[in-house]
Image 1 (tube, helix red, strand yellow):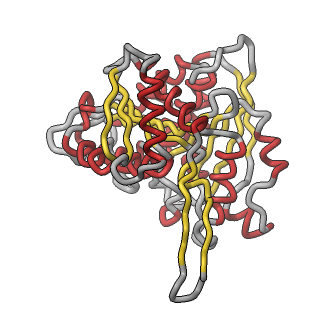
Image 2 (tube, one colour; image 1 turned 60 degrees about the vertical axis):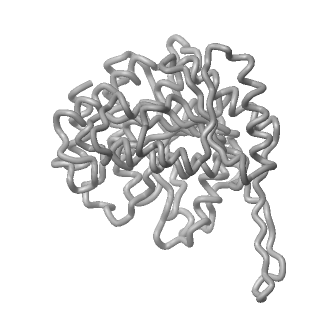
Length: 358
């Protein structure tokens, strides 16, 4: 995951504030970036792009090929959120988010699930040491590939076909990333395959065969398997069982939202869309939350954690660790809640708290 750090390099960071509360949380993440760059001695230049709902409503454009080519010139991308109440659902998600992931071949979605303060956990008697795992989600294939068709649309005999598209190459590179990540993480050194082998017999036959074939190359990693429905149950009952989980696009999308809840809520949940050989993108996973726009009550910690992931990815590991530790301190000693409007501080004040604790 980590790129080799280059001396005297000025990192080029693309910033997409996006819609709703996206610009508010990104502003706080950039405040932390500025403080971290001074403290840890690295240089950066940021370029802001206006991709999102407002641009679409004005121009009819989501993301053009020339935009993709421009973004390929950057070291990393920080994304606020995409989603506008005046734009039909699906247009921005497909035209911006999925196009970015597919065009930049960000084939890994990386979701750390870590509890920083047990007071914010909805599970009884669970401590920070019980909820500390990572979901590695395949991010470029499966049902989200957008393949399928209608037959007899609009008639009583209508059929809608949605195809889960899985290639050996796509599955294997995701699984290999997960094994390597599990080894580098060096905690329980256990990798769980999460799927549905008993029902989805084609796609998950491929996933299971590939998983156990690759596992032979990693004798230091313990492996196991769990059906996706059982995984959701164990997230709630026994989250301490997990270390690293690897799964497909749709199942990963579902279980990581449950992961966000047991770690304290969407206000703390960050994720990365990773191309290990190219440009990766980092974001809070909670969406644009338009009902809170302009109220200065949204929690910026997920965006700040996303910034930490970004810095680790480009090689600034010390800065990344300091940011996470500052977030932990703020969660444990300052905030009343991680929910919007209940933190006890404004969005800007929470950003200042993180800066002051760096």
